[in-house]
Amino acid sequence: MENFNTQENVNEPKTPKTPKEKTIFGLKIAGNVVFYALIVMLLLFSIMNINAGSRSGGFPNLFGRGFLAVMTDSMNGEVTEYEIDSFKAGDLVYEKVFKDDDCSNLKVGDVITFYDDNPQIKALNTHRIVYISPDNSYVVTMGDYEALSNVYDYNDKQAAYDLESQEIVQAVTASDIKGVVTGVKPGAGKTLFNLQEYWFPIFVLPVLLFLLVEIYFVIKNIMDLRGAKQKAELASDKEAMMADLESQKEEMRKQILEELKAEQEKKAAEADKDKE
Image 1 (cartoon, rainbow, N blue to C red):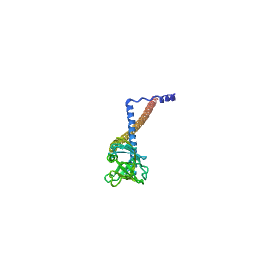
Image 2: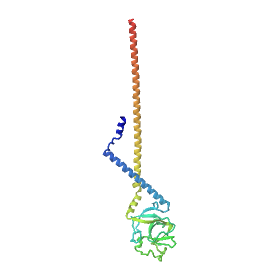
Image 3: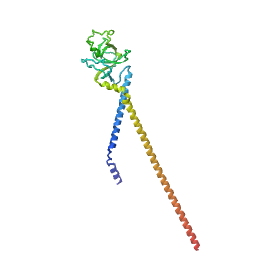
Image 4: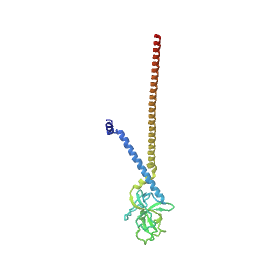
């Protein structure tokens, strides 16, 4: 009979949660999702930046793919005949890491990102290839903005670009090429720039706050468990003390009863002796 009742209790439906409990539960789930999403993003950005640092002057990338925010309008032109059209400041360019030892896999019209060792720049630059050397050891690049006022036939190698007299073009060796542009997302560069500029308040600070909240709840739970344990121990001690008191009272009661019985027996014996 008892087993049947136990099974019946197990199968009883759980008490439905109140609206307040449902709200708290939903907020906890949402908080955990946001927290772990931020952790994943931090991890990905860290890996990408580590990869960037592994190649001198490289850009953040993951599995050979990355992106960069366009900072200037040097590529803001009217070129549309190639795979990659002109783009402007504030756009986002998708990049494939360039690992080749020469320029044989590149072609005129490709847009590349290279390390510009100009003392006034010393940073990454992104321009279009307008000429490739016969031995594939270097390429010549020019921004699409310059092409608006300087019209060249990019395929005319006879022009050859006298590198010493043409300031609007730039020779780039294969070792300085860091990536090849594979796509453009208009306007998305501003978002990336803001994320990089305000990295700490957008990503790091929320993670720290979530960690502090988690630490608070962990400490609170530990304290609650300790408090519950102490209450249980006090209750157990109290029960033990009450049992001990009851035992002592019972012992005293027996002792008093025995003494009263002995006293009565003594008086009865004395009374019988007087009658004799």
